[in-house]
Length: 124
Image (cartoon, rainbow, N blue to C red; front, side):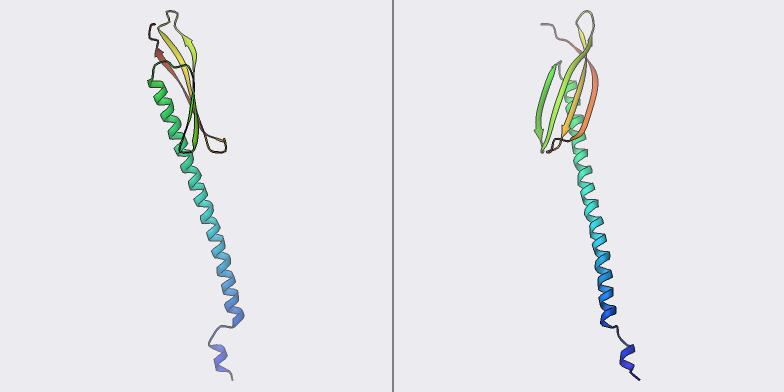
């Protein structure tokens, strides 16, 4: 009867297929955006942890420097505290606690590390 009607798709079928494809594309794009945000956050946290580790290692290698130091590197604010924990009776050694805190631009703590280090005191 109408052989041409059976050969192609109707306009409704094409529109439904386009709507389904656009919905699936929207879901995939949203998932990709979330994955990128998580990846950036993880990279920033890794950078902060590396910075905190370097700060603690460098402070531990130095002579006794009790007190606090702070600064900024790659938009990450950092603080290093060195406080005495104990000292020997002769005053030759002091056990210090070294703590490094790294914050992002909004002030949120991304990394915090601490260690204890036995340091020799230089006679004055």
